[in-house]
Image (cartoon, rainbow, N blue to C red; front, side):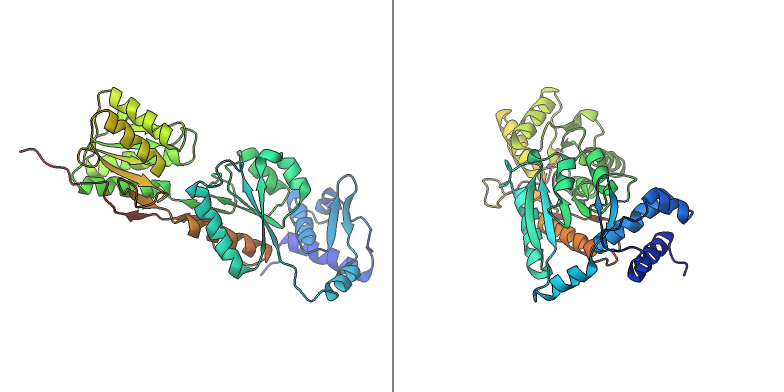
Length: 360
């Protein structure tokens, strides 16, 4: 097999360092010079240098360049310690305000449980306290799991600086990024299929914000279900909400009812939004589940709620564990079969849905 060019650059530089052409503290040729020397692209030489940095052969100093490390000192220091160094894993949150929300607690539990067998150290970072540049410059981690929904520019900056990371339930289409996401399309389609099987045709969908990643996926699934199952295609039945919370679900469903359209069932793309829809329906004199069957998403609520909610379970704890496995594989230079993993949901049937009575 032909050796990739970036690997050739690495091998040549490591051999020249071994032979003493470059000594500890010496500055290697710049990535532009390396690209010219090896007749390749700048990105290829950047990848070669990035790998050498991760292997501890060199380090970079802004304004100076790539500097050769004193490997003898590193080896001696390693020999003084009998304990292997554990990788530092950063977990990035948007803020700590919603730390007790079941969505976060389930993912964090999955990461924590996996870390007990994977052997690593976990650090939690709040992005409200950093700019993305400050976060990268601090370098207080070997790799990071991103739970906050960063703007694409910030994600691409992490990639540009060769920071090992995994996106949890987020992705950028067309970019080669490591991500583990829930399948919002499948969740919506399967929920509508289940409600259709109970005899419902006027089925509403409560989606999240219009700019959220899951919203167009949910809309595409709703359109497909309309075609496949003969559901009502009235555009009023697909409603976006401001946030994924109970109050937003309440407002969105109340607005839908004010249009004069009265669905017999609703799928909310978040369990708390489903609770809001039930409250709005009750204020309009519509009883759930007798007159309104309700399916939520996320399995975020205790099943001992006044109306145990049928839901699409994304097994968020398993998603968190998968993120950590993927990140540690990157750090260990082990092959990762898939850059992007999409997890299928599971329908959990409780008591918030009933069969639609047909009028003879």
